[in-house]
Image (cartoon, rainbow over all chains, first blue to last red; front, side, top):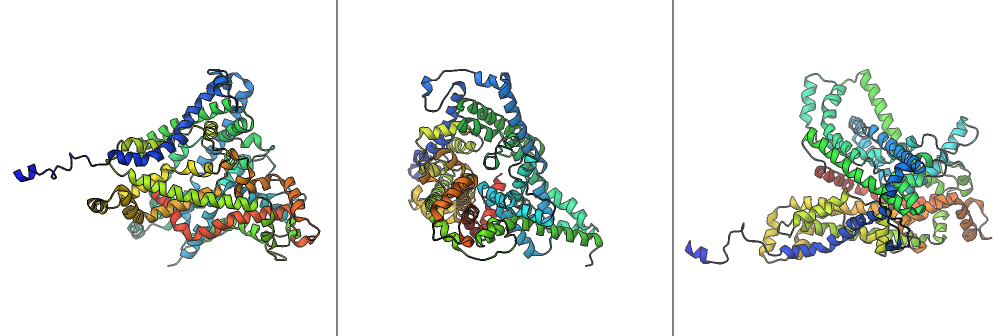
Amino acid sequence: MRLAVNNNTIVSPVKRKKPGRYKLFFMALPFLILTFLFSYYPLYGWRYAFYDFKPGIPLSETAFVGWQWFQSIISNPIQAAEVMRVMRNTIAMSGIGVLTSWLPLMFAIFLVEIKSNKFKKLVQILTTIPNFISWVLVFSVAFALFSVNGGFVNQMLMNIGIIKTPINFLASDSHTWLSMTAWGLWKGLGWGSIMYLAAIAGIDQELYEAAKVDGAGRFRMMWSITVPSVLPTYFVLLMLTIAGFLNSGMDQYFIFQNQINKEHIEVLDLYVYNIGITGGNFSFATVISMLKSIVSVFLLFIANTISKVLRGESIV
Amino acid sequence: MKLSLVDKLFNIFNYSFFAIFTVVCIFPFYYLFINTISNNDLSNRGLITFLPHGIHFSNYFEIVKLPGLGNAAMVSLGRTLIGTLLTVLASAFLGFLFTKDNMWGRKFWYRFVVITMYIQAGIIPWYVTMMNLHLINNFAAYIIPGIVAPFNIILVKTFVESIPASLQESAEIDGAGYFTIFWKVILPLIKPIMATIAIFSAVGQWNQFQDTLFLVTDSKLFTLQFVLYKYLNESTSLAALVKGSMGGAANLNLANMQTPTSIRMTVSMVVVLPILFVYPYFQKFFVKGVMIGAVKG
């Protein structure tokens, strides 16, 4: 024993600090700097919200206006109306998103009821493809199918004799929220069901057999075994949807927007782009995106708290 | 087993629903394709609906002559290859480093990276940042901001943690440094997760549109997606382009003369074909990716 204590190489592994603490840190440092530059440094740009900033003019030469831009959201009636309109669009489309969030779940539940494995596989592969094409391409597809000059849908409707003159579907503001949701479903429904399909695949088959012995029919099993098994997954995804309520993104809406549907298609992100990058009102655009970011973090906290209270698990 | 009437009706409904939805998902691509290989005059008048007529492939050869399109294809391909390679390696390396609990301030730095998934400054501050970093009209703007991807780092970290530590320890005893361990021990083991990350990031890079819109005005740096967007939006200038570059006296044959429609559709096909070809083979990686992500939640 004495020998062992005297021997320097034998030291308790718990107390010994492994070498390379800083070496490891310095190896990660370049990436941490990138993270800082592209994710934290932009936050410093929130100061533009307090200036009358114009691109090209250094901030030191621009007037500090304090909370003026923030107040103008409420005090300036034109700006107030605009912000209300954009909020209405964002909430409406995210709201429809929440209301239709159970569709991928249904899709999965009904798909597993298909007995032919080949057919099931084919459906799964083909319906997930639209998820992997860009919104530009979705628009190209929309253009080909719904264009007023020889688009597929107009041709069909005219051939059948339902309409005499082609309808300009894309340059129209009727049902903009619904058609945007429909495109979102076309793109995302198949893919959205993947997570549920995996959850269903993980259900213990004995449950179904036991239910069968007890005389449960097919629908009874779907309702009492399959549905409860996928609900936790649904709940997590629903919470994430709520956390991202304001983050509708802008690709889809930017690409589908035109002068006619602008009234209903402009969501927060797109509005920020339109007034900031296109309109040059950087400061007000910063105010809007700043408020949006703060509210989003707040929503995330709420969703996370709900999840903790109801399921004892956090979502982030 | 005898099916009840309700069961039969349900099956009929179920099969028809999925058959119809699948056709709705895939028909647009078929429609685009048959139009690009059909008589351009018929296609332009919307007369090609279910079957191709007057099959020819000249559209695919003709679009090569469009000014800037070849260049855009190179930019798209370049950003996809370089961007994917760098983000995969960076995610793998950083994910590995974050499993080392003797890293100085590991927990803090890990959160420092991960939290950026939830905090966004907004597009205007981001745009000004990119301006300050001289990433306007710069190819690097397609690559550098995407190198550190928090979600991918989480995926790798979780994956590395599931590998038995003894494998790394034995290499450490042999005196291998962190780089050697990463390169020789970890990389071969985390190939599946790297494949998943690679496939997602490649699709993301190929489909990316917004960064060109914000940061690029130099047509030499336009991507295919952006060029296609321009074609979709500026049909008049496209028509002029058609007249200018294709409408020489030699090409008066209506059947395969380029029209704005034929160009739009052919370019769309070129943009979507890589995805259509690659997707069925890599589907399992996509599915795996979303599942690992779900477990991590």
